[in-house]
Image 1 (cartoon, rainbow, N blue to C red):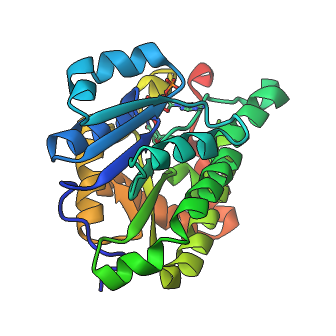
Image 2: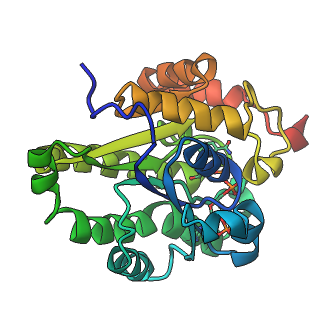
Length: 273
Ligand SMILES: NC(=O)c1ccc[n+]([C@@H]2O[C@H](COP(=O)([O-])OP(=O)(O)OC[C@H]3O[C@@H](n4cnc5c(N)ncnc54)[C@H](OP(=O)(O)O)[C@@H]3O)[C@@H](O)[C@H]2O)c1
C-alpha cells in the first residue's frame, strides 16, 4: 500500500524546488521541467538560477525564478504570497536546500553549527508554516474534485539516522528534520496533504566535494533526481538511495550503542591515516 498518493508524472503540476540552483535540486528541477511541470526554482544566487534556467523558459511561462534565502524569517511566506497572487501556487514542493561542512570535534565552531541547524532544520519550519497557510484552506476542496493532493518532499540524509563522525551539527539537524517529517505526515494525511522524506547517501555535489575521505557508493545528481522521482511514483514516505549504501545505514540505526560506537571508532579520519 503506498503511503502517499503516487505521483507518476509531473506534467501539469506546479512544482517549487527550493534549492534548485545547484546540485540535486538543480537536477530535479531540470527533470521536472522536462516532464512538463510548471517550475518555480529558488536559491540565494540570482545569477546561478539564471544560468541553470535560461530566460526562454521564463518567457514561455514554464519557469519562474524566485531568489530566496530560506533562513530569512518570513521569506518563504513572502515568496508564496507572491506566487499565489500570480496564479503560481505550487502543489508539489521539493525542499532541497541544505548546508554541510565536515566538523572535526576538536575545532568545531558554534557559529557553523548554528548555521547548519538554521538552514537544515529551523528554516524548514518557516517553509512548512508558509505552505500550510496556503494549502490547508484549499486541500479539502481538491480532494472533493479529485485533483492531486498537495505534497511537500523534504530532503534529509542518512546522516540523520544516527550521530555520525564529522557531522556534529549536520546529523542533529537531519535527525530533527526526519522527526518533523514523520510528525507532519501523520497530522497532515487526514487534511489532504502528503509528506515525504528523501534520505540520500553520498551524491557528488559541491557539498561533498569538501570531503577528503572516500565516499562509498557515490552517485551523480541526475541519478539522485531520478531515484527521487521513482520513489514519488511508488508513493513512498521515505525515499532512500542508493540502496546498496542506505540499507547498510539502516542496519547501523538498529545496532546497540556499544557495537555502533565501536564501528564508528574504526572509521579513521583522513589526517590520521
Ligand atoms: N550531496 C550529498 O551527498 C547529500 C547527501 C545526503 C543529503 N543531502 C542533502 O540534499 C540536499 C541538497 O544537497 P546538494 O548536495 O545538492 O547541495 P548543493 O549542491 O550545495 O545545493 C544546495 C542548494 O540549496 C541552495 N541553498 C543552500 N542554502 C540555501 C539557503 N539558505 N537559502 C536558499 N537556498 C539555499 C543552494 O543555492 P544557493 O547557493 O544559490 O543558495 C543550492 O541550490 C541538502 O539538503 C543536503 O543536506 C546531500
